[in-house]
Length: 119
Image (cartoon, rainbow, N blue to C red; front, side, top):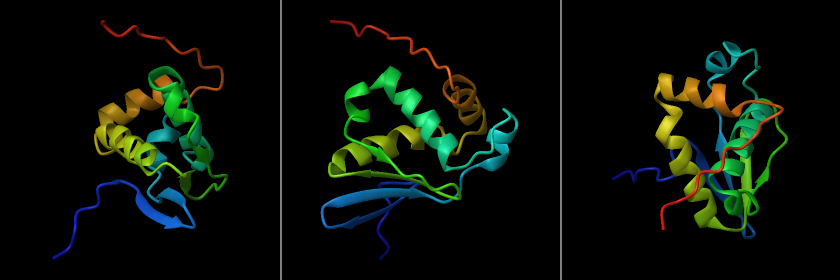
């Protein structure tokens, strides 16, 4: 029986305590409609900006790959990668949500809006 990929839409791998997520379907067309290529650098921009607003402490645990034809994230913290996979899963397969995330977070001069959490 095949086990479900809990890191969907990413592929997970590990080597010498370095865990990584790789995204091969970069959703090029969704980014192109916003004048981006949709390469690995654009995904890194989107997620860095999203995390700087929603979870800056998680951002500190990650290293983004520098590939262009794919997107990868590395971390020694497996749970941090699982949190990223969950975050991306929420919008990855929904064209409208993906479009909204690209419009909001794929910006070079991004200004995070910090939302205070209720006490």
